[in-house]
Image (cartoon, rainbow, N blue to C red; front, side, top):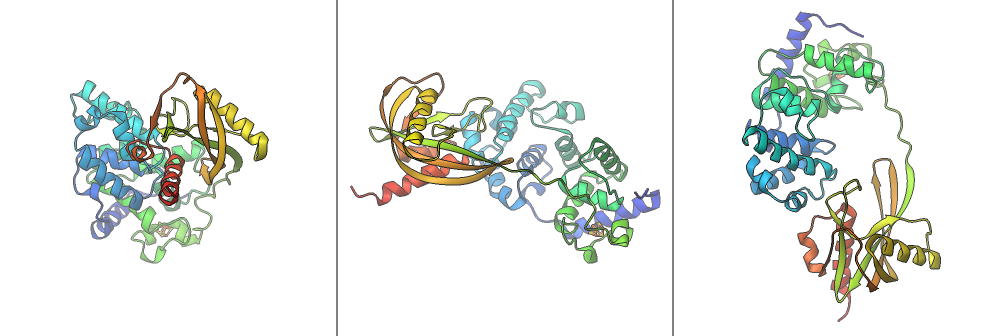
Length: 365
Ligand code: SF4
C-alpha cells in the first residue's frame, strides 16, 4: 500500500479541484448549497443512479420546498412522491428527520456533526456529504465511488468491506481533504469515481490524477479494489391476490417491519404450492389469515419476476371474489381501480394495478 506524502496530497487536491471546476455535471441539487436540497439529493442517491434521481428530486422539491413543508406533509404524500425510487425506508426516515429538525432545531438544518448524525436515516457518509457540501465543513465521505478511487490511489489490495479496510479508507478520505473547498473536493472524488475511475476499464488516459496513481503505474486496475464476494441468490415464491367486491378492489397497508412498510399493496404472502387446486386452497387460506375475508380464488392475472436484495421472487397474481368475513386488525381500503393512482404502492403493486387498468380497457362491456 502506498503512503502519500504532503507534496502528493497537495498535487491531488489541486488537480482534482481544477478537473471538477471544468467537468462537473450540471445537476439540479448542485445549483444551490441549501442543506435541505443537499440532504434530499443525498438520500435519494443512496443505491439509486443520478439519471433516475433527477426527476424525483425536482418533483419532490417543487411539492415540498422546505423542511417545514416536508415535516407537515402526511406520510402517504411523501411515499407517493417517492414511489418507484425503492428503499422506502429512506422516505419514511426522511420524513421523521424533518419532524425532528422542526421539533428540536426550530426548522433549521443543524450544522454540527453530532446533531446531523442523530437524525433518522443519516449515517456517517450522509452527514459528511451534507456538512461538507452545504457548509464546507471539513468532513470526509466514503461511498461506493470513493472507496474505489481511494483504494486505487493508495493501491489498497485488501477487502474494502472489512473493518480494517474501512478504517484505512476513512483515514485516507480524511487525510486527503483540503482546508477549503471541502464540499467541492468530496463531490469531485465521487464524480471522478463515477465518470472516470469506473469499476471496469477506468479511463486512466483522461484521469487528472493519473500521474499520481500507483495502481495505474503497476497496471493493477483489474484487481484493485479487491473483487467483492458474489451474492448467493435465493429463489422465492410469493402470491398477491386482487380481491374484488362490487367493482372495488382491496388494498392493505404494509405494516411496520414488512418489506414495504407504510406503502399499500394487494394482499401478498409467501406460497409453497405452484399450481392447481393446492395453490387455490393455499391462496384462499392465506387471504383469510391476512385480511379476515373468505374469498373465491379466480383466474391468474399475471406473473411478475423481480429481485429484492438477495431474493429472486416469482410473484403469482390472481383475481378473487369477496364472499364474506370481517377484516382482521390492520389498515384496509376498498377502492375503485381508477382511485389506485392516489395511493403509494409497492413496485409490484403498481405493476399489478397497471395490469388491471389494461385488462379493464380491453374487457368488453
Ligand atoms: S489513473 Fe486510472 S485507476 Fe488511477 S485514479 Fe485515475 S482512473 Fe483511477
